Image 1 (cartoon, rainbow, N blue to C red):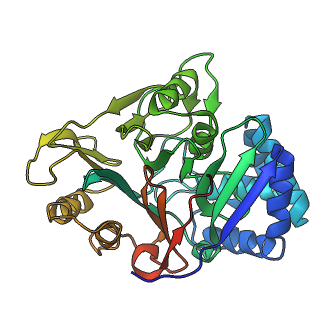
Image 2 (tube, rainbow, N blue to C red):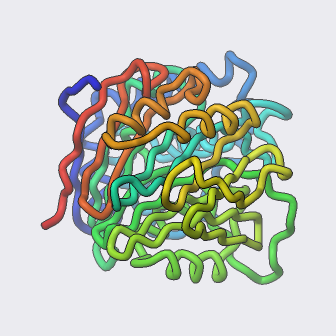
Image 3 (cartoon, helix red, strand yellow):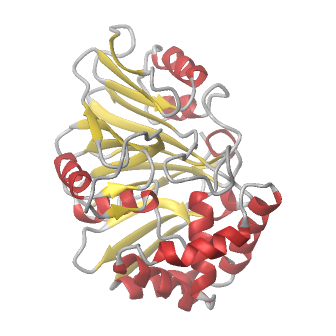
Length: 359
């Protein structure tokens, strides 16, 4: 694996202070990056900018105040009008890879891949984040936040962003999400968390997978997500398949394989598969072809993590051409690896070791 320096940004304080500090840190590049991203999506037919401008502000009014404060701080620190940051957040999260431009919530069609595997007595997780690029693979970072009154956490994502797809908190709770098809309904009189903020909210408020379930019971979502969870304190693992108002938690047992697929509901299974690994295994992606390739790769003996798992997520049959960044981690030991800077990231990016940020 290649090695290199990793861009890690650390912020602490109130939501506004955390945002302002991040805005200051990226003020020289954030405006150009946002314009490049939004412009690229519009030219590719993935984003109707007029629709985005109509819908972004009313949507943002539904976001929890602490995230609104943080985004305002980022805008002020970077010297960008808050409305432009809100449009970028909305457009970047709700553009689609198929179907109608700015497709209805619940139609997120990303093709991320995740693997949870027990190797040599420790639980490891690997993840490819596949989404629209337009230059954004060049401005990914590891971001450590300690917002007052909340659990400190480390997420991987885009500079200047308030959302998260993957991260870990000081309690050694690791969470990442894949897209997942939702066909249920919202519950009446139930608050809704925008799907791009589910992982951050969970990392900042949850100490266990059970706490994550409590959050999902308290709040609905505006899109389907499959949450891959590892509690490094206890070794507990699960995949939680979330609809708008319902969820299914699925736990592995010894010598069983749990498979989750974001586009084909027939691939939701727990199989006897003694040949895969001697212990529990959970994996998921968005197509049958990727699922089949993952089965082949994971059937081989694994003795050298993170290298073995990096080879799995970098395999041409698994990695998408638009993998923006990749991660391999063992939350129990605090080993964190980040693949970024190239496209696709797992095979063309630089992998670096990220230090555990807490004592």
